[in-house]
Length: 208
Image (cartoon, rainbow, N blue to C red; front, side):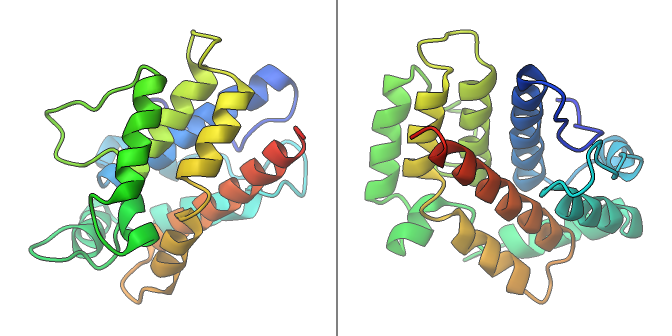
């Protein structure tokens, strides 16, 4: 996946859709695993000034790039492990079921699996994470934006999926990360995700 090295452009509808898909992909990648040196190097040299001043995502994007420039790869990897890995319960859960029901593998996951099956999407059985992991959900949104099948990859499907499977809980996860004393890089990433989710919510509301 290529990094969106510029903040989301505003020059055309096609550019905006490409930027949305890339941003979902970036967020998915960074939450799933800490960036390697090459990936982190791209993030550090990313442009932080938006083409149009005052863009809603400009400041959270700038903050993420700034933290990436101030941390080394091991610090970010250690932070990822401390927050999301290790033995026993993680410090912060990245799974929808936990935030919606208090437990993993509950009804929200079953409902998600039904909707994914209707979209023709299935989980890679080699991956240990369940489908309600934030990275999986962001990748699903990326597919619904950039996929070739217009019966699936369209705004109506995007709005429905976002409203059912991301909007109800993603702010809770962002709250937990931004308040966590050990979170630095991932607090900044949560800030970007929160701002992006707000932009998505407003955009989908305008479809009514």
